[in-house]
Amino acid sequence: MEELDPTYIQAPEHRSDSNFIPNQPEEIPVIDLSRLDDPEDVQNVISEIGDACEKWGFFQVINHGVPCDTRQLVEKTVKTFFDLPMEEKVKVKRDEVNPVGYHDEEHTKNVRDWKEVFDSYFKDPMVIPSSTDLEDDGLRLVYNQWPHFPSDFRKSCEQYARHAEKLALKLIELISLSLGLPKERFHDYFKEQMSFLRINRYPPCPRPDLALGVGHHKDADVISVLAQDEVGGLQVSRRSDGVWFPIRPVPDALVINIGNCMEIWTNDKYWSAEHRVVVNTTRERYSIPFFLLPSHDVEVKPLEELVSPENPPRYKGYKWGKFYVSRNRSDFRKLDTENIQIDDFKVFN
Ligand code: OGA
Ligand code: NI
Image 1 (cartoon, rainbow, N blue to C red):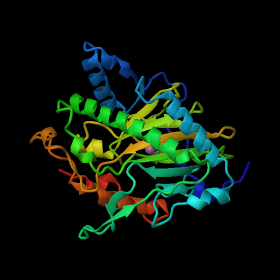
Image 2: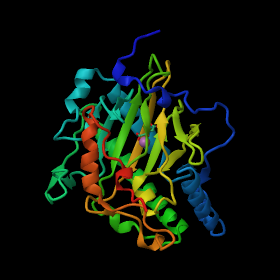
Image 3: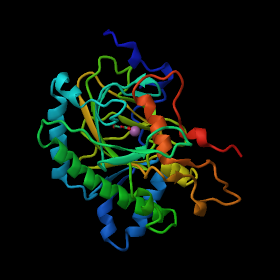
Image 4: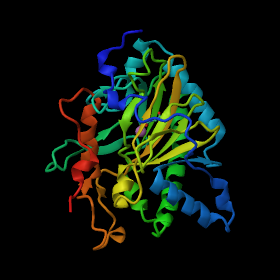
């Protein structure tokens, strides 16, 4: 058996075979958004989305309006970039000052992920808090960095991200309606959005039994829109019992999942599911998530309309930007303690 660098080794209870039952029939819903054109079907689509957010925190969409050619172009261009020699890729490597660009040392829950990534902000420049200190109101601007080659890398990422953002905001409206709220309820939260596009490349791995492409985690954002290729490997933990299920690749579909912010806004009605990526020995895999994040000054706490004396708030509020900068510290190095999680804001009534 091949040796694996110990920084990649998952604890036995988090490895790909734990709590995974092969060939289970249950499927995560695939929702056809062209049904929204039929006035008689709109309400059904909204309820199906609401049910999926409650039961799984995951669903897939087809006929979602993100053009196929835009997706194919970004998929092709990013592959050209990742195939470059390492000395080229590290020219746009991220560091403490510049939190976006190329990176191959990401840790999830303090174990190294078997992957390479490239991140770019949706807004360039983007406004973020300048420190993790809650008393400090200082802000700073952060800028994207782009490789010179391939020459259409930047344009193809920006073009794809614009479509993904449009879809994400459309889904937020539908989610809002599914909660009995006005369609625009969340609009103001995204004026200075901190959203970003990530390209994940998972190389073939000699020991997929020990390492993971991404270790189990919940996304910290509002909602994620993810394009995955045909290889497969993404798994979600079922809300009711924690058993892991694969998110099967469906041609041209996008995978949607609820992040921590939406879980908190809905006071746990909607579920931000744990998920992970299993790797394999022979095939590289690509995925392209767009993470929809609020503005830095948005207070993330249960919505007043959704709490009551019978259903009191389960979280204290926190400022999104401060959470983000605290959390991001752990991307750069292995920390001695677990980094900040939303459970740190739970109220125990
Ligand atoms: C992530 C993630 C899943 C995938 O980047 O947060 O969960 O399929 N990715 O790559
Ligand atoms: Ni994720």
